[in-house]
Image 1 (cartoon, rainbow, N blue to C red):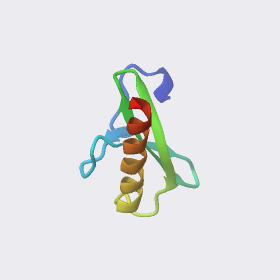
Image 2: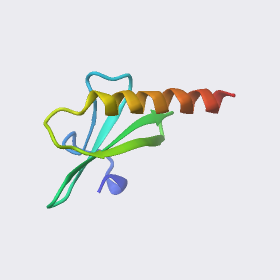
Image 3: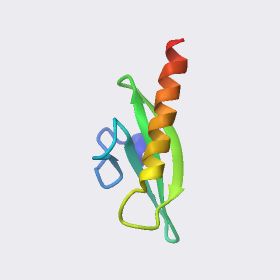
Amino acid sequence: MIRFEQRVSTKFFKQLQSSDGIYEVRVITSFKSIRILCFFDGADLIVLSNCFVKKTQKTPKKEITKAEKIKTEYLKDKSS
């Protein structure tokens, strides 16, 4: 759905409050609630960093930290 929409609802794609430019993509199935963390590289590219099955209401801090680390490494590698 996200691929074909001009504007995606915050129900499926939103910026995480306690992060540095990390966004969350929600994938809802009848069995699991899957989250993919990602970040923007410019205006047209979204880089997917890590994925996990969400078991609680809050996004685990360790997953956010992992995504931020991946973002930092990605941007460092890109600039070198």
